[in-house]
Image 1 (cartoon, rainbow, N blue to C red):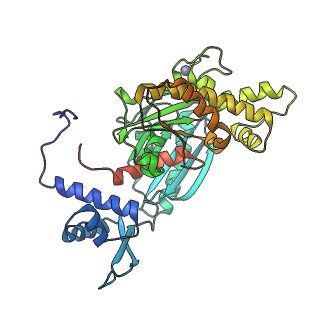
Image 2 (image 1 turned 45 degrees about the horizontal axis):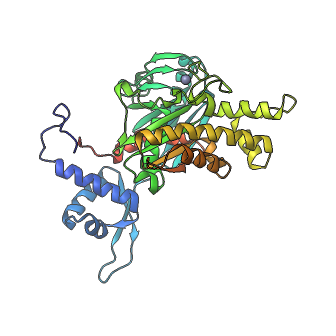
Image 3 (image 1 turned 90 degrees about the vertical axis):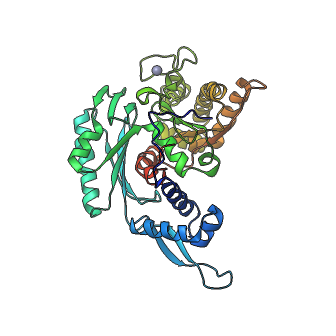
Length: 397
Ligand SMILES: [Zn+2]
């Protein structure tokens, strides 16, 4: 049982039960829409009058709307409810070492509008561009945007909204949230990219993942990051620094340097950059270089032997690190996100064989699954920083 933390626990307030029931009803609508009041009452085992009062409040807040009528089970046809998705409510900003994507989404996480530009190594330039685009999106939506979520490839302190360290650009202590927020007049939530993607998996992932209380998200991109979901929430550690497993040592002489400079880190063996370096080595110097990892995946899917070999070896290294995480955390699932998920049929065997080989008999095993968040998981992550707050419990656990 979890020990009561008196520094964090407020004495039960009069409306605590109402808050809990509100979240339950909102999440029934989110997960099971279209759904009637009677169905929610039956499934949640709550009074019909309680449901009606909560739905009325959720409708007034603009979170829920009525949509047509369902089948009658004798008597009047029930009115069905769904999330209100008429307008965009969130802006997501995914900053990566190469490009920055900005998008708006509705309450259900569907992307409405999207644009991207090259990330400038100068943080002031990048932030100026982020502010210009988000201001335009916000103005176009006539006040429906409630907050902005930003994901970053580095060490982030969400409590202060600061990018503590972004290794690719050597950004240190940049007050990202304050800078964007004061320019836009909107709340800004920032987080590390892998944590943000883990949050997106928790709220918008496939049921095998979103229903798991404990899982690990491994984000393979220019680097390798991990987001740990522990007991249904992101595990952060001190100053949000948990999950830096990209720097665990799994060997020596990796094909590329890690973002920290070492050649021994998991990231240096398993990142997109590592896979591209392997491919260059295998294909020889005369071969026209692929522009990037995306092209490497395309070539592998088309059957090019060197591209496949580079991916398989990268997957094997990825599997070594995942084995260590599985042994240490015993999660229900490990989700692999990033462009590599598109090549799942080519890498799945190398991954699972390595993990089965390393996770010795008697020690825990876990489901290894590709992310289902689509092409830009970090963008979905950035949006989730805003959206999860709408659905997550408002009460302290
Ligand atoms: Zn490193």
